[in-house]
Amino acid sequence: MGTSTKAATTTYREALREALREALAADERVFLMGEDVGRYGGCFGVSLGLLEEFGPERVRDTPLSESAFVGAGIGAALAGMRPIVEIMTVNFSLLALDQILNNAATLLHMSGGQLAVPLVIRMTTGAGRQLAAQHSHSLEGWYAHIPGIRVLAPATLEDARHMLAPALADPDPVLIFEHGSLYNLSGELPPSAGPADLDHAAIRRPGTDITLITYGGSLSKALAAADELAAEGIDAEVIDLRTLRPLDVAAITGSVARTHRAVVVDEAWRTGSLAAEVSARIAEDAFYELDAPVERVCSAEVPMPYARQLEEAALPQTGDIVAAAHRAVD
Image 1 (cartoon, rainbow, N blue to C red):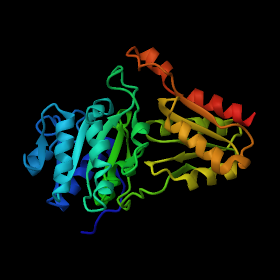
Image 2: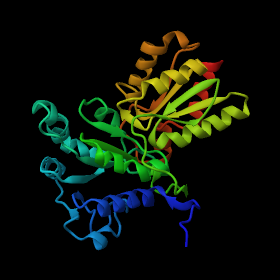
Image 3: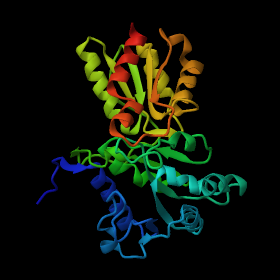
């Protein structure tokens, strides 16, 4: 019997799990560690079944101490292992910021190239699920500020499935931010899809009138906004950044050179955000291509509310993106 070439229906969660399964099966140096990743199957169900398949040496539950188990992951990477560390949410990762910034990101530099840290850290980010202020913020832009690490934000099933393998092959620490609203995203995953390109942004929708630049959980909103704009005769191009550090500046400025207008959509707070960095890069490298000021659509500058209507009001929504596009075009 031949191998099927038919696209399989899956979810974002299942795509991540299959990537973990493939990594664990392919390399005995790979192991997964984090809070509740074993018997419970992960706080968001990503690692469900992996403990039974690979055993407690390869799928390790950890104590409730992010600094301790991220530090253990750094030590394991230094010793030749290929650890995948799961942190439950980006807010909790701040407890391990010292380990990430002062150890993982700097050891290669401070050792004169002698000590690589091939560590992958996965964590959930973003709001939209009524989990309130300690579980809902988008802080990946903070990590994109740090030299010495790579920062990824898979927004599609293909990237959820295929970003892990090249991340594990990277000699530097790699942080993968999984937006919590995407875990139930379902669709078809082509079997022909291969390892993800971690160096380049992706044009998710080509257009000629305006560029919508985003990543992660906001991609679907940007695509929905592009559909609304198309119905009004405005042809929007949608750029999925995919990698937040290093930014694919050439893709951003190349698109702006074609459309001459830009809207940056970022679920983080506006002040000091990744959206600010993207806007600055456009101003530095493509200023004379612009026919209108760069627009930014970000979250309200408040701790994320719990009440659904307040949370929705605080987050960038499709209507906000459409309105920003109109300001740029009109």
